[in-house]
Picture 1 (cartoon, helix red, strand yellow):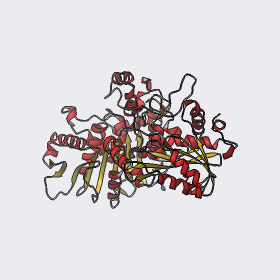
Picture 2 (cartoon, helix red, strand yellow):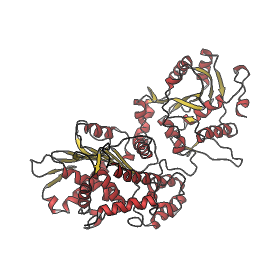
Picture 3 (cartoon, one colour):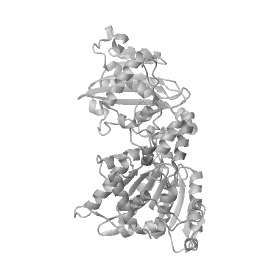
Picture 4 (tube, rainbow, N blue to C red):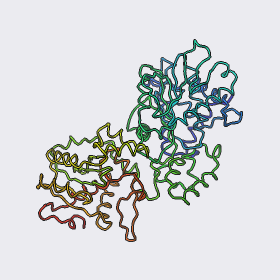
Length: 560
């Protein structure tokens, strides 16, 4: 049998020393493990590392014969041993059956063996270990749930000792002995209701493809009564940052970074670092810990060559091969990390009651998203708050055709759903007038497209508010765009809207020969929205007019 603890120790040492090329989040996960091995000796640290518990799951995993290995048993790689050891090895002092980590977030890129080498062994091990308990594997689709069920079934059929005692049918695995009440069920996101389930162990597979956090919350809440329960997320990164998985990614990073403390949350992320060049083969192992063992470097190079011949494939390549959330398109505007520099600042619009602010209004199309933005200046920072609107019919249609789930934002009040299939502008006028009463709204920058009637009504109701048409031409909008961009990069902007996070990722820039640019969608045919970005830049533009006098105001004064 392998000396698993020796392999684990060497892996951690090689990551820490730089002998193994690793990204910052992998290094931080290893650093946490090394630190906790020292902390476990202290009386005030409630956990200990149970080497025997870790070795048990590792030896079990290597006894399995997944179908894709053609009769061979699993041969775990060091990074997989690190994951297993953490997820299963850490225990509560005084209760060796109780795992430390109730939640685990494991992010690694495609074809690195996360399913065969991590997910499947974890599921089968926990199902067999806990008597009279429920275990669940939740996939993103019916097809994937059925595929995973068949993979687990193949593992069981390949091992006579398991095949003799287990029954596999109808997307569920049970014991043939009716006195054994344990059950392993397979579900999919958006499928039948899981309310009422009480899992002891659950895995969400490829969580980045889930449309909402309903399954996550159902499993998490269902575990509350079980002190030894565990929920594991196994996923890759994704081009979309509007999905619930990205929130877990950010949480995992905060914990690894030490800006958030949660001792029962394990995370490890294999990805390139922010400024890495994905063309450099020397860096590929950061995002692909199975490089040379499972993945041949020539395959990655071939994938890069193919994507660069068809540029629309590049974001997907970056997300799925290099762990770059949002796909970091070739001309994407702002990196997610840059945009979220001030995410830890917990600002609410209520904090600015009665204060001076500036507005930006982008009405866009009558059957899609519209945005109204307010900008407040306080203590050297710019605080942005938004009102978004969408017709209910459009929200349903976009979800049906494009899997864009606006309903999570509608349910939380971030987006206002307007009845029908088109925007009723009276909703927007009502809200702007309400804001004008609550705050000192000095002026509103607007794009004249679709705005004539709204502006006329606002001017009649509140003539004290400057209503400033901002032409959307490249020459006029470029200076504002570049100045706004500078506030983001300088850490001056505070904007924690999840809708804006999604929209920022939808923006690319296309400078002309003179270096002028403005926010644009990544293609004219794209249905992704950037309305909040435009309204924010217009609000910023209004705030930059030093001689703010409505009767003397000139758009030219503001822009140049």
